[in-house]
Image: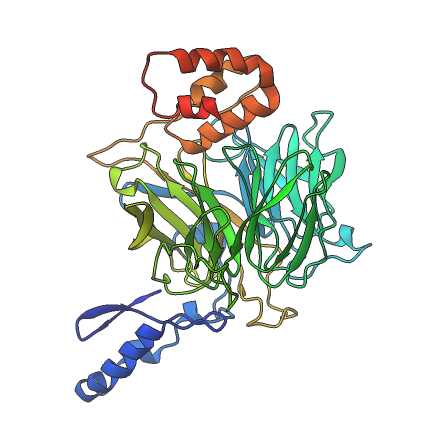
Length: 493
């Protein structure tokens, strides 16, 4: 999404990904370019190929330390490496647990699914990164589970995690507390073998209602059944939700092309990033959204949040920032990863009556390294933005042969962007998050945290691990005359 200046006008270069073209920009070029050629006989900036438009990057890979030098972030922010190869390979989705640990799904088999008997040939796994002193660098790295098949969506649950791995949604638990999964239960599935491994079940996000919300990706057909007889059949882009005991499944919305990444906002509304259509949608329950010519339900499509494309359709990962530890100008900002332009795009979310609108802002993070592929974003309980970098020469699925020999299979990085303050505002540090049954009362206090990740983790912890024991303290909180911004609403849920 590099800028070009034509006759003094700042424009955006057209990014080609799949079959998507910004037609308004194309018309602009057709109108202005002949005039420009009459004035300037040559323009070297346009004659040079743009490496960020290449489906196969022409550059060589950088070491993590050299890649770090290619990042540009706003004043007052710092970016640092959390971990990289050989500790992890090809990170896909991330999530934090009640102990403040970062869970990461990785796959070196992608884009090919693993056939039976080949599990030990690949390193498809779940890795836990434990930063015990809160400095952003994990002291302990544990491989929680191996032998998986392109795991993507992950949600830490109780003493383990719920995860997608072809072709089931699994409940993996660590019953002996050694940090490694020792039980593996099919929660939902088999749901059907995917035709397309770049559009599978992803972005497992726990809602205020206790259910798990999931994106369903492009070009795949899935049949998902609950133990109570509920069943849904999905084709291509959709969102749905499940109960964590395997009992019930429900379709939440219809459409989108290839949603990959989602986030709840402070009001409880769900937003998703969509690859191959508009970058961001607010997902209204039971609404329909555009999906390669599919019809709506007769009521029309759900409202559009934005009309711009951020320069490509290769959008993934989404977080909504409402942490008061960052400057005011970032409040209610939406960040999405752009794996084609190697940037983190940024929009300001405002409301027009009841409808949200996303207004384009300058990109939050820019990398000069075209191998930078931000496939997932997570807001950390420490108030930092975490980025899963699928670091690769090739990111396209259809555009480049799946057997292309230069697809990278062993590099991958996790980055952390934190705010360290300027003269006008100084960052303060969150305490380490480590909730346990013996110190569960801390979770009640965390319900009022200005950090949404901490609030949601505390809510889930009280629900799943404390249950009736937490009811009386929460009733006392609700009966209090004190004014609270968040915790009374969280206690009601």
